[in-house]
Length: 260
Image (cartoon, rainbow, N blue to C red):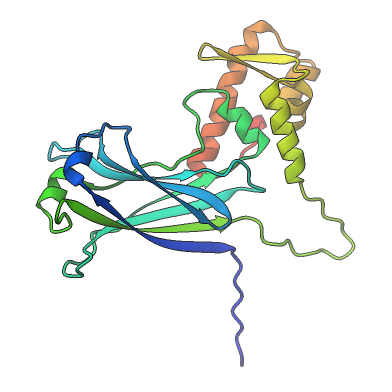
């Protein structure tokens, strides 16, 4: 009996080799200083950042050689999930590649995500957590550092949630328009006709009650129902939004604000 294999995910995978030359000079770079290389993978713009001296220090007392994946595209029609795996390699093929290290992350450019990023300077969806490849002390004594250079093999896997949905006979399926999301994001950015102001960590930003109420039963009740806002509830709303954001980031789920 013939068995057919059907691919049920939309995956793009790209392999890159990056050589860092002049290592002795890069060791003087600070914790936030990095070496960047840009690529287009899966129709999106990405940046691989190599940090030659990331803190905190490793157990041997030296900084880390670390890597981050950065999402550069301004918009995307849906959530983009990505994985970055990397390892040190020997271009001579004498040494086996180092232990593979990886990180998975989710990127979202929807207007709701943009709104949450404005809630706090600590919220960002532009880059992954760091991948700590090897301490600089270990690298210096390893065979991967030769002639003042080392080479890193990167594999970036991008999973896009945009496979066509299976049509259900007799039922109309409505899909959210990326253009509408862009217009709402622009409305939020400009603050045009905004009618509510949030104050978070000493910074204020304007928003629109009707849009927020449409996205959350809690804010619907607070803005338009029996819980109409008072100045004493501003801090409560900010904490709620931040907890909502944190839950989505750490569990990869998207709970409603009503759950909090």
